[in-house]
Amino acid sequence: MGRGPAHRRRAAARRARQRHVGTGLLGFGLAGLIVLAGVAAVIIGTLGPLEGAVRDIEHQRMELVALLDDASEALRQTGTASANASVSLRESAAAAREGAALTTDMATAFEQLALVSGVSVFGTQPFADLGTGFSQVADRARTLSSNLTATAESLATNETDASTAAEDLGRLAARLDTLGLGLGARAEAFEAIWLVRIVLLGLLAWLAVPAFAALWLGWRWTRLPAA
Image 1 (tube, rainbow, N blue to C red):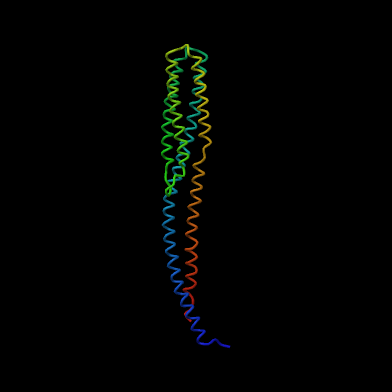
Image 2 (cartoon, rainbow, N blue to C red; image 1 turned 30 degrees about the horizontal axis):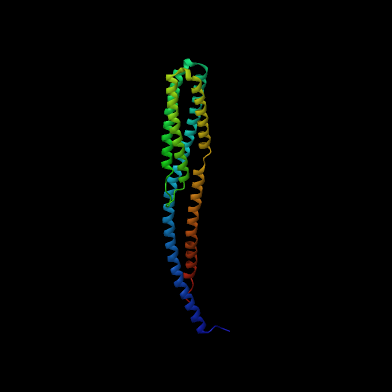
């Protein structure tokens, strides 16, 4: 049995409505793609400098670890010289002053790292905890520099204190080793950048799925025959 005119009219009206809806879906999908492109541009513009900052932090961290190792070794050598011969006190004082200058430079570098770690991403600071740790290390490095300066003055003014100065230098070297171990174990920056990348990629996927789904469905519906 053939279908009557009323059925064909209802089918044609239904397809017409679907074509109209499909046109709207195409518009929605295109708008979604525009928003997706804008968000992707923002993300690309954010991740580039952010990853660059992480690489800079890691590079400077490794350099500072090497400086800590060198400073610790210099202090141990100075302590040995102080314990073995009082005639080397003048050279030991110079080495202690060099260690003080080195730890001062190191404290400045840590303060700069703390500033770099304060980078803001979408209103958040993923490296805030890392920056706090760098600030604490900078404070300890400056305190250590003051102690080294005081040790140098002690070596230069009183040769009879050679044994005590050697013990102080040994303790300061041990503190440098502790600082180096703590700094060498830090990996929060890389964990944070991976977390930010996952969140941003998830945001892109969340925007892309409805946009492409609307385009696909709208394309299909707009191609429905008129009759």
